[in-house]
Image 1 (cartoon, rainbow, N blue to C red):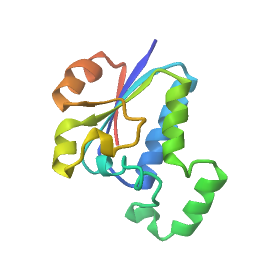
Image 2: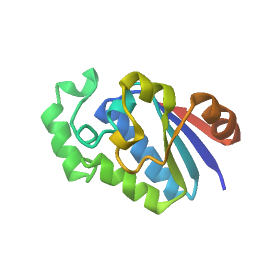
Image 3: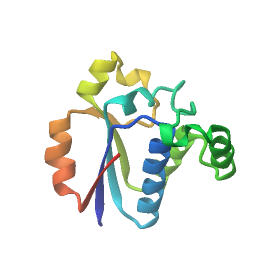
Length: 137
């Protein structure tokens, strides 16, 4: 089975949707995926923040149109997408331990779809080293 390792640092909605649509394609292609959320992406993993529309500057002028298109494409509920993707294939979501500490958060503060807290070194030595492809967002 082919595998992906994905490191997600950016916290914008459009960045998160890019990651999730890549994961949808990966599980459809029967690929294993391991995802490490770090930096500002960690703050988006809280239940009250994951579905909040926070667009990067390139998308901000089209905010309402983007929101409507995400709704129409069934991409507006990022937490549901995370859950559905995990249920569809071999996908694990990790949160970086140091980023979690910087944000002052605990795993219990995050959406339940997060599998575990991992250090960046462990993710690099295990998941990235074993992956066929590595992506960063």
